[in-house]
Length: 119
Image (tube, rainbow, N blue to C red; front, side, top):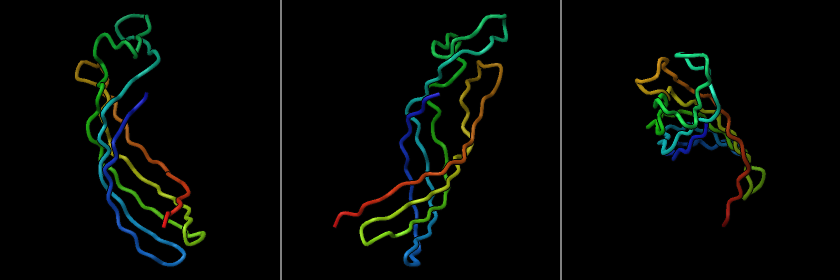
């Protein structure tokens, strides 16, 4: 599955030098959902091609997913930071009403990175 999302997230951080700890929340607005691969068809013994999705079993846009998370930043220098952010994306329904099963997914993830702050 391939998703293209636009994150809209706000947060607040408390500074405890050299650390900053914070919370964040918002939404991920999905603009595209694409499925690939094959599954066994429930109607016969053939495989169903998810990319073609001839029966419209899966959505091509899943809408909006709420998001909450925490973040921690460590200042390595005045302009360089290391960033850690665990977050949770709430349930999203990927299947349509035409599908014999309802596919829902929630995700827990960790974003990490290095920030350079330009003065």
